[in-house]
Figure 1 (tube, rainbow, N blue to C red):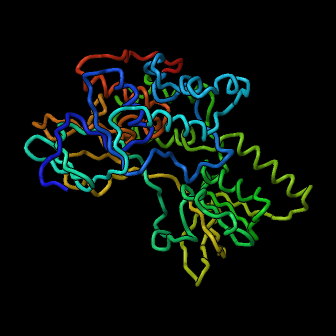
Figure 2 (cartoon, rainbow, N blue to C red):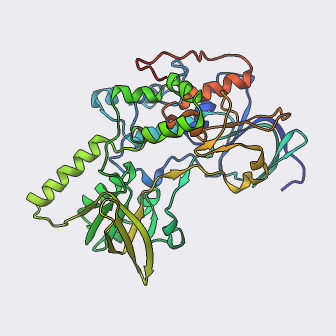
Figure 3 (cartoon, rainbow, N blue to C red):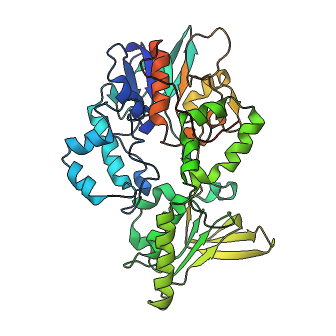
Length: 425
């Protein structure tokens, strides 16, 4: 380790997930943009703990790293298929939903080729000193004029569960890392009625080699709700709507975020259909070899560790009736939460926080105290400013293009939005 900066950079991007990967792919066409990317993982990976064999994307492959901003960019998904000699097979397969493993492979393919990537290097602390960000990493000290935060989200646990998280109570994003044998003849509870909860429940329910003794799926929602994915819902995920949303007052934004929840957090119709078919087969063909317990309108209000097992206290939100469940394994599929990591604590007072993220300017740079000329660009951390699309992959290329235009000081990418058919305000 050195006591002196090993280098000075204009732009330092922290985190290499799909958002900053998109930025790198679009920036690769601009020789005057040099961005250093830091990632603590040893290599690129994307939700590999929840990458089940049947998992599909919930958006079109056109919403890749680059296409919606730069259709000719060599880092498009179609370019990946062509480069890896998969294009004709992919076309013949006529996927209605793209397999998620294929997008994970696509991201890895791009990450291996893009310049400026530094894996296995984590950030310990970021300070602001004399007009620069002083970034202490595991390997060096970097002085950066500007930052791009692409740190992503972390698993969210309900408050009652936080103290008892262990190898038998964990988040759904860790599910694929577990040995399937651990579920054999166990009482398993899946908490959460979204996409991850549905996929984990389906995988457990169809696990022929290590079937649980009991299987319960709990959702706070009034049904196991499908994702709202009509063409009109899709217009929520457009630049035009995002800019309309940006112009609204904070109260109106929070109301819309609540209304649009299922456009972002619902379950794909195909997995719900498959679950229902398996329930049918289980009852009428297999004679209820494993009768599952599906609970809606249900809150888990308390969790107690009882030796090697758990006791869950649940409450029905409609009747207010209470009950108890015994569980050997609890899998919390309770979503992800955007939270600044501790290494950013020294600069946290510079940022303005709203209820659902960091307040940003139109170029996705954080609103900083007056007089500071540096920029901190925020990737997928400003839902309060831009709406539900900000925490999804769908507008990643558009957001990255806006950031690059801001970096360059001119519009290298045409950001004029197509009007939607819906009038939003």
